Image 1: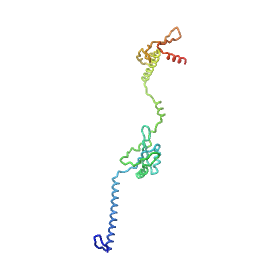
Image 2: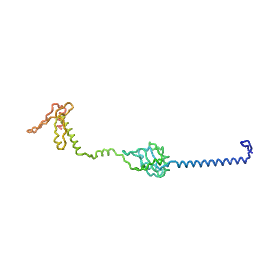
Image 3: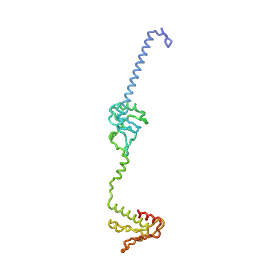
Length: 256
């Protein structure tokens, strides 16, 4: 006989039956709880957004580009596409890429393994893209990007650029340079008539004042080259206000 919790006496057979019943009840309860957990997991999986087979790889180091990514992630499974995001202007890497695997499970394993992995001096950031965030054009430009153009190529193209200049523009430029040359010569006291040259080009002679400004004063641009038909020599009349430095430079140039 065994005393019960209520103060009564219970036979040993009844006590063993009650223990057996309690054990079977616990087993049934554990089994029911396990079934409930499995059902909840199935419902959560069904309600979860579908995952894609595209892996986002961020913070990639310099030099770790398409070929390197393709070879590195091929150890997890078959890789279908690789794209490194690049600048349209320079063709340089923007620091992140996309890798497409054949199966979503492989992409999940690769993301869990490589997230936080240290390569060179960069820590990779990997995660699987949700299916709703995957653009159909994400791999449209794979392996088709603009390579960086060297500086010497840019300068060469700039120098060899075909300039579409009209005849009127060339005539205007030549007239402007011719008048600048005339002003410089007039500043040192030499009269240079450009009317005949401009008439041959068909350009109008711009109105020029009879005064030419110098650094110190204004001098008259009168004719200073005197031609004598009976004499073969040319006499150059030097203006009185011409500095000695200008004369010395002219002498040196004439000797050269």
